Image 1 (cartoon, rainbow, N blue to C red):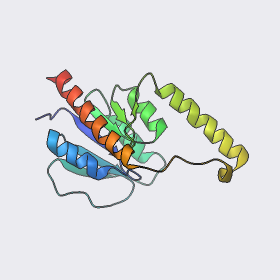
Image 2 (cartoon, rainbow, N blue to C red):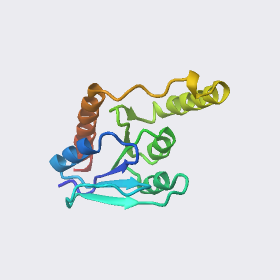
Image 3 (cartoon, rainbow, N blue to C red):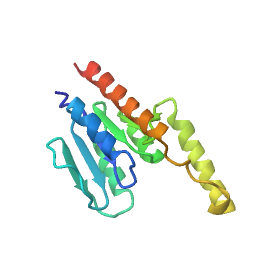
Length: 156
């Protein structure tokens, strides 16, 4: 069992929770679902839920404070990803794309540019993220499995 590995999920808008559970069961890795609101999680010894306050960044703060070398963080929040990458956590977006030390700077810069564009032009002229697809789901499953296998090798 890989008890030193944990998965933290920024869960409020996460479209791949069921996939996370499946991979975690297979790898016997605990999952902590972190959210600002209550919702159902499986009744399973590997799955726990933490409901934080609705204060700004409360879920992000909870996850970032616990992120480190043996953790996998699932989030699409680029600023949370940046905080966790700095702790050497493995960080994965819900579309299966990893955030790494090499890629996070560009992601943060792009986020800032898009925020500036939205502020100047209004949201109706700037599209949001592309729709979530089956390819994203498949890439996510493969990426999470790969990360967990890599962490198991490192920690054994």
